[in-house]
Amino acid sequence: MPKITVKPHEEICPEGKTFEASTGTSICDALLSQHIHIEHACEKSCACTTCHVYVREGIDSMDEATELEEDYLDKAWGVDPDSRLSCQSIIEEEDLTIEIPKYTINMVSENHH
Image (cartoon, rainbow, N blue to C red; front, side):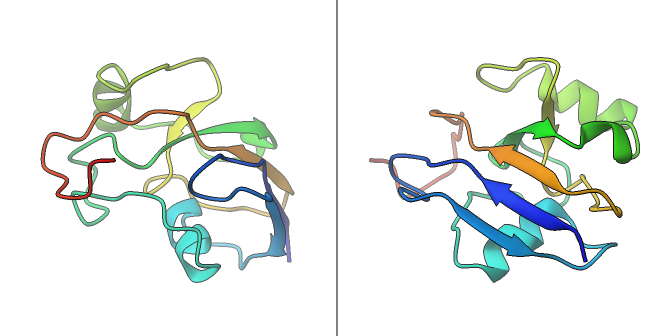
């Protein structure tokens, strides 16, 4: 099983976390299964940008982003070459290092801080 390392995030995962995840699982589902409460306002249907993450290590092991995912990433805050929507990013055999962006753009969330 690949190992997922989540870098510390001030609100969502202050201590950071490392865990094993099943191949074929989305990064979003893997994070949620570990009680890392990443936003997913569109219920993981590739219709928003709230689950945007940076795949800092292991991104080359994953399928490339679809055109639809790329279109939504164009609207996300702080996009860089490592950006993916975690609901669309399927874990393969390689270990991954994930960084959750400091901000997210969510016009429908009722949990604004």
